[in-house]
Image (tube, rainbow, N blue to C red):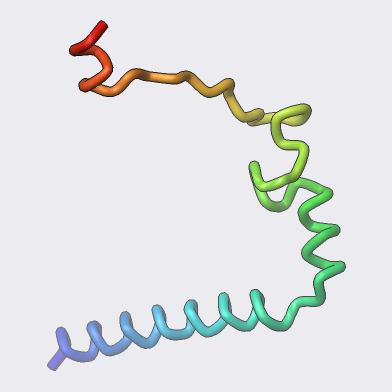
Length: 72
């Protein structure tokens, strides 16, 4: 009985988290989300991520696949 209660409470907690996340994603006005993005609330999701700020995107490295190495 105790295990079933813990499982039920765990599932209820997950459901509440999903519900709150969905409400935040659908009910917040777009200007609030844009302001949060401008102030760095979404780490690494800004449009100018590569040009400034902490946690800049690293330069991409092109790594050849195994098939390309066979014909080198």
